[in-house]
Image (cartoon, rainbow, N blue to C red; front, side, top):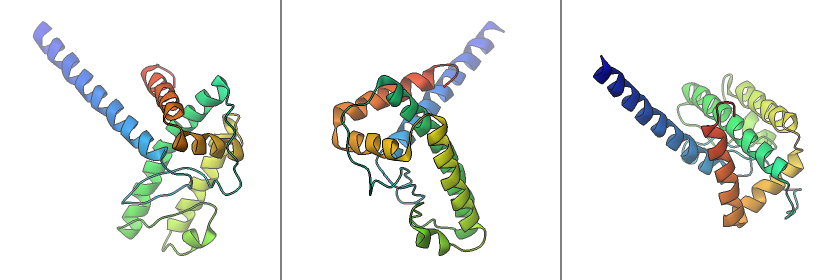
Length: 164
């Protein structure tokens, strides 16, 4: 009985470890983009940075909120990506602030994409960030490896905590 419990505990730990690793890889890919994008070759998400200007001063609270947003968006992005993939087979690049990339989708894929974009905006704002500030942080992490590591450390910390 004790051996069975140890085996279960060990396999659960291995599954959890793999899940955290996959989540971190997904989040790293998420952090590589600026436009809410759903793409099979490069599933990434971010927000348009056309009007964002890099601001090097970010508070710890903003970094934590950004990390929470990234975690929340990645989960939803993955879900919507899979739903659109069921409709289309291959998911083209979909950018929230480029209506033509959404309007060209067949079936109910445009509704799924619009819903995702609306939810992304709500999630960002619910965490106390503006779209512009979110984009500023995204731009900074793309150009500053130490800043990206700071965000990744915060994401790891949130993933390890019981209530991210």
